[in-house]
Image 1 (cartoon, rainbow, N blue to C red):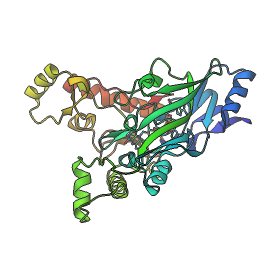
Image 2: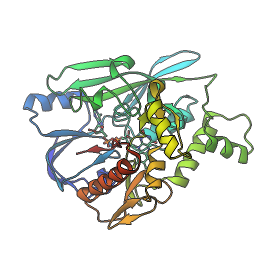
Image 3: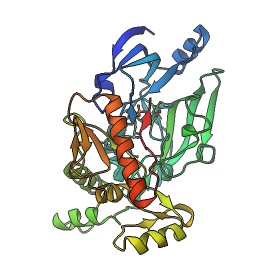
Length: 338
Ligand SMILES: Cc1cc2nc3c(=O)[nH]c(=O)nc-3n(C[C@H](O)[C@H](O)[C@H](O)COP(=O)(O)OP(=O)(O)OC[C@H]3O[C@@H](n4cnc5c(N)ncnc54)[C@H](O)[C@@H]3O)c2cc1C
């Protein structure tokens, strides 16, 4: 285990910001984390996966970055109908999806092409096209960075919600997730094709009995057509969460804006797409200096090159302020500000 000093994070954050870490250590095993705790892990420190949901505000992160590189995929239980996989938190998420699709394991094909690592996926309960990781989640192993104790969190203990879990609140920064266990189907896959874009892709290809591989292919094609590739234009996907408002609040919103787009949210709430709200404020495709809102999807804030974390933050605040002024709806960032 080697602690490096003054390390560039540019290739480790999907905004492509030229941030630096005062110190960085690659973590390859639970033993290495324990060793680090024994040496003395003093604040500030942070855990980094693929950096696809982080905004480094300052040019230098003043503490120690723990870069998760715990690898491996193992079948820990296998029955006729399902398999439980134990996956190292440092595995690339999309590679895991492809591996599962290749092996005929179903349940995460709708989550194809989401950037980042396995270990970060439960943090915000990643989701796309009607599926969230909680739907296939079995349990995870994490190490308490204060005590060095390894703890198992089942689904209930993770307190999953919409882009949310206990690791974003009460336990933020306290545990380093080392292994995630997923329960995937081996036959009678429950395909989720209710998104119009998926069905029209399959129709166009003449697929009448889709497989998990067809769904994955559809999702990849749809995502490539509307989301910017971070290797070309820096971004962190959706910058804000879709606001969930009460039915009463929605009624008065709809009275003022009859064409408001909406879906059903959690616990009887109404979900209003943040992208629609931002677009109505005139931000779609609008550039301010080195930053802007992506032309195909206003919810994605992009770095056109050379932007700083402060510039991106300032743009996000401007966007959120105009949405609040027009619709009286606060936007909550999905991206983690570091
Ligand atoms: C183009 C694009 C599209 C995207 N599309 C989606 C989408 O459709 N759905 C979706 O949900 N998200 C999406 N995202 C967001 C992002 O990919 C996910 O949130 C992903 O899970 C982040 O993984 P990461 O490894 O990059 O996390 P990082 O950005 O490295 O970290 C995110 C947070 O998790 C913490 N963390 C990371 N690893 C660990 C660990 N092992 N233990 C404890 N804490 C940890 C970090 O400290 C940080 O707070 C998108 C991002 C991009 C750039």
